[in-house]
Every structure is written in structure tokens, then in C-alpha cells.
Amino acid sequence: MFDLNLIDQGDHYLIELIGDLDIYNNKKFKEKLADIYEELDKDLVVDCSRLEYIDSTGLGSFISLLKLTRDEEKEITVKNLKKNIKKVFKITDLDKLFNLGDDE
Image (cartoon, rainbow, N blue to C red; front, side):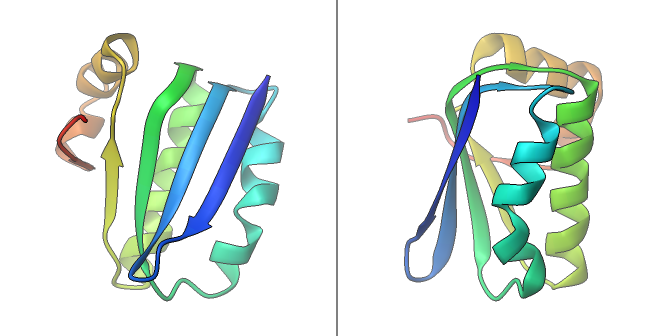
């Protein structure tokens, strides 16, 4: 199961990821972010407090999102990573590419 909430917070978009971001749910992730892809006019904050699992396809989606924000000269912050997901970010050195915000 996977779901995504996109919330306009005024100065940034808050993206809440819920469930498993994997090869089976990657299409849904990209479809839900279609509005942002059209015209990224704000920074992004990705809240992963309810993200349970991520695979290499999900990591690829994060890299695509990072590329999008950089192309549009915006910032992306990833926060509230669970230990198992933060470990994957560290193993793949993605913790060096992403601003991992303070966990709440």
C-alpha cells in the first residue's frame, strides 16, 4: 500500500509519504506528483514519518525529485526518516545529496 498527500504550506509544498515506496507503487508516486512537475514554484519538504519501506525504484524517484528541484533552483528537504530507511540513504550515499532535516 502507498499513498501520498501533497499539501501547499504557503512557502513550500509538504509531501507526506505513506506506506511502501517500491516498484509496485512508483507509478502512483509519479502520478500524484504530476502537478509539481508542471511548474515547481516552491521548495519541497518530504515527510517520511509514515514511510515504511523503500526499494531501489523508490530511491530512483527521490533522485528524480532532487533533479527536478535543482533544475528549478528550489530546495528539497527530507525529514523524519525511520532508521531502516535512513540506513538505506546512508549506504547509497544519498544522505550526502539530500538535506535530511531534523527529525521531529
